[in-house]
Length: 146
Image 1 (spheres, rainbow, N blue to C red):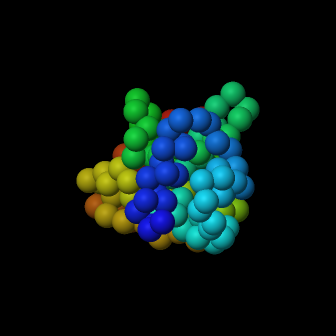
Image 2 (cartoon, rainbow, N blue to C red):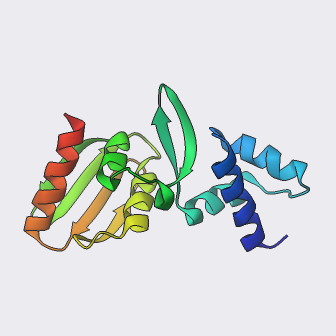
């Protein structure tokens, strides 16, 4: 099966049930005769913009671009525990491995106030259009962090 077909299967799985672990997705793919490495599956999830949603003490995968009724800033606040601003740049601090998830959320939303992101392991740089935009996004994130 080609990559596009595999991506469609993964999206369907995520839509149909609340899957919390990559190994569960990998096993479901294997049951359909599709063998993928953990590295390939991680890349697929990143390319699809898949994020983890935390709800009632449970985590599960979701497609960020299809989360209806959820503000992207609210999603960011699920991962960030601190935000700092230097002029038009925001620095979001998260737990190890979650900066890329926050970048995916922003990249999927493509807000006009944000020009781009650069993710490390636990730190995300958010380059805003100008200082005013950075102040606004910072205030919105802090609203959810309080």
